Amino acid sequence: MSKIITLSREYGAGGHSIGTQVAEKLGIPFYDRDIVKATAKESGLDVELIEKEEEDSTTTNTLLKSICAIPGSYYYDSQDAIHEVQKAIIINLAKKGPCVILGRCADVILKEAGIESLNVFIHADDLHRAVRVSEITGSKNATELQKIIAKRDSSRHNYYNHHTSQKWGDSRNYHMTLDSGVLGYDTCVELIVAAAQKED
Image (tube, rainbow, N blue to C red; front, side, top):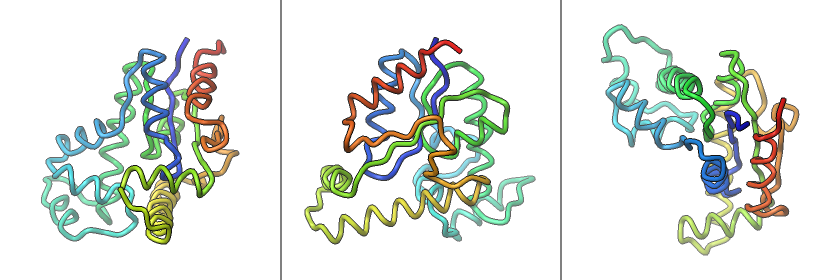
């Protein structure tokens, strides 16, 4: 029997690819940009603004003004507003049944909502991640790649730590932590699928 699976990941560790394959093998929905689009629709905000802000610890004035213009809404910053909308969407998606949810503090959100999930963290060494990010961005400059990886990881770390009481990437906060650089994507997929299908 498959379960709800949440995937947290370091940038360039292949979390999106692994999550997509897991969902396909289990025959369940995979949610990533879907959540962003649903958040935009629910809040009336622009998708690009949400994508820029959701894993960035800085406040975007344009987005904050947009949110403050929504009737009945008041938040200290734009991240809090986006997180609250995404929180409700993630819970609703999880209530529909087994699925794979990528990032966005889904592991903690579901735990606090009393919804059981298999929580996985994907990581990899710098070399494997640099190769992957080079494929994504087209950059071949080692220094530039390191800066991109560090910035994205820092944003995810800050976002997760800001919205939860847990530390991003701490193995004690997940059921599985997998090194995609050593194991390879296919093995990671197999391990997650096996764990998801395991009877309680």
